[in-house]
Length: 241
Image 1 (cartoon, one colour):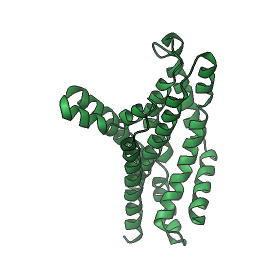
Image 2 (spheres, one colour; image 1 turned 135 degrees about the vertical axis):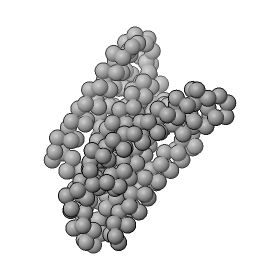
Image 3 (cartoon, one colour; image 1 turned 180 degrees about the horizontal axis):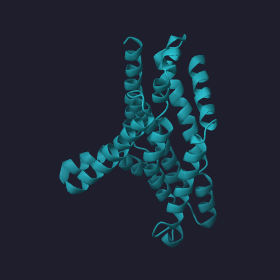
Image 4 (tube, helix red, strand yellow; image 1 turned 90 degrees about the vertical axis):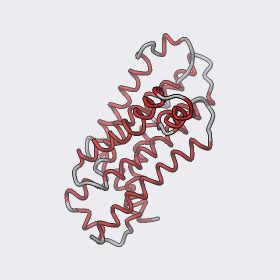
């Protein structure tokens, strides 16, 4: 556990040693604020105290933010050759993966916390139901955790950070969000239900209604576990290659 926390702290600090953390957080929060308050019909014209659209837009923006935060976690180490040095140290592959993952999750948590002024401000303008807000934050955190896990999985496959970014973007936005929703709308019956059930955005939407369904929690935790396990296996295979 000591090794995990040391790697996590080092990774978290490294984000702020470069412009990555500042740029990603600034752009996500700026675009999120614009979309929530001004994207038609916009909060002020909606005539109701709700922040469900904030979670919807944040979930979409994570399709860009998660690849940006994870593309260099392993790929940068491999590209620079420092991964070999890291693996010769008395740390397990699982400790490297989990430590770097927790560092990225820490930065994501800061980004999520910075959105709290929005529901607090909305509550001063109307009678905000905090049940859906709490459910939305739980869902947003679980979705972000799953996205970051899949991002580090992709980062463990390549030495090129840009390749890792675009593959992660394709996986998160096209495969797990856009394609299931599009096919779900085009299909009917049980097929439509199935396609919507595997959409990462649809799972978040159900939690923003204030109902934390065990199936949604299991879905996100399963994606998180899958991403970390595959990343661990990819790093483990490199040690013995």
